[in-house]
Image (cartoon, rainbow over all chains, first blue to last red):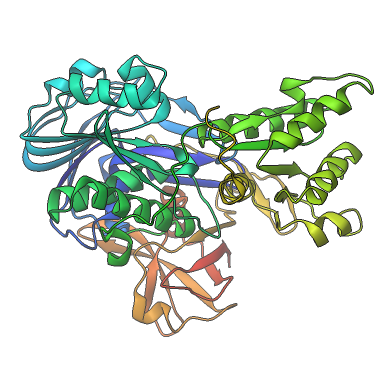
Length: 401
Length: 111
């Protein structure tokens, strides 16, 4: 398999991490133990640094064109949307002719690909016309909900996916739906829900790249159907998120049949975001977590956004929000009385409560810690767990977000 | 290495702050390319030594056991680690939890 994609630094400010991955390096490395012939085609301003990284993760076959400078995805925390440093740097376009190609959209150039079979993840960077111009006998397009809606020019994700499939001349479109799973769309009236594979810990940066690597390896190489390949994608994503170790083992790339599950579609489950918003730091955290929950496919009731700051009258509206929620994510640092009340109310109403506290104050959190099902010191894990707990608790009363 | 982003903030040892020593690297990470046979024998608190090695003519950082066996590689802060090791600085990687399915989480620090 040939993997065409970016080699970018990924910097997390908290927890501190700086690694040279990007979609191209990660996806190629993910399959390197299984496919020793995998080739990475990318661009770089530092050939030696790229090859050192590639060798460290078992990648031996790298082709790179010159880029003007380094591109860095900088994440304040791993669940936040990144700032991209160096997004103006350009590189000559890479051109690839191959049998089986996985191609990611790149910031610095538009790749030219001709292949017998191709899997494309446009990554915000490729227009529908560019995708359509990739000539291949078999073509799969994988993208997240936001990208599918943008490319398909529809707000309904299924209609958008079908629009992308037709306009991109693809055999299948896979919609990555964050923490709630994926959809394999082979026609507007023929789709399959792939449930997520929850993990104990979650490092979310690169989960989508890993999904694509697992899907592509199974669909392009192992004769798997799109549905079976999407299961391999889910396994690969789960393996990366829980270990951050590449290459992935063979077991993490195996195709299979999805577990039976009632489909959960974007906005189909609701998380109540409980947390204080009395200063900039608290409001920033509320904003970041709310965006993350939405990106992960949940509907969100955030008192700060839905009700705002007020007097006693806000309590009733907050309780209404709690009643509609499938689960509560409580930001417990500082043990804010309002947040503790909301967590206690939810607990009494038999709604799952997931708590996040970086500084666990056992004296303040005795009740919450003793009752809440989950209490985490790692923010991404807490956010993902709240979505998964909401899915477990979900009843069919919500149909859309 | 040219073009590598540099960060000066460090944290660890119970606090955080800034330092002028760009080799005062302390971070938690997971070993890449783990050697499953070697990794299966590691235990919590075991100290690995980081060493500059070569693969295909390119420098990499390996984590070695006291017996000199390579347990895996380090990719976090790779450029900085390579540079500091070249300058003669030493680093250890302490195993922080029981290796599970070939996954080894370590705390890297000077020493």
